[in-house]
Image (cartoon, rainbow, N blue to C red; front, side, top):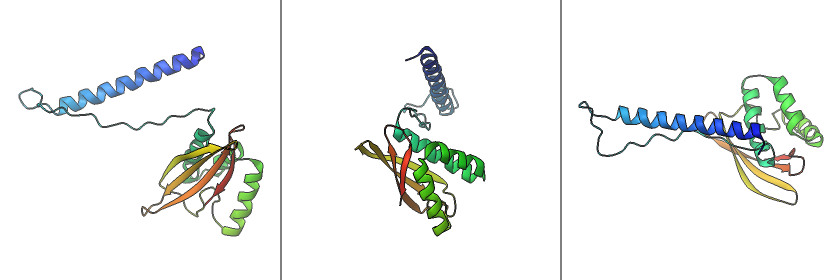
Length: 163
């Protein structure tokens, strides 16, 4: 691990510990009785959200792409969405998506005309030089759809999006 990476990891670890300590202290303080004593049962702090990944992992690239792309489309930022496609998707896939979009009058990445309110990316394994993932998109009414995505392990570029 390089020195900047080690320093960054140490800083993030300290920050996470401080947040968890603050959450525990706040929770314990809030559960104290009027006389200042703490109830006999311990109150656990609520789990805080966590996201992790690696720029070297093709699976992380799939998750990063979908998170960033959905944010850009949700915000109406077409230029950023286009740049994300250019960075994360292979040229042949970009051409395939343009054809799909002309035919279906919908966004080829999301396979829909609107933007999901939530997304989840789950690994479905790797093999033959590719990594596979299922992207579950949750829509306004709570309905979900699944998109099956494949990325090349060597280039980390997304090579296939299917529903």
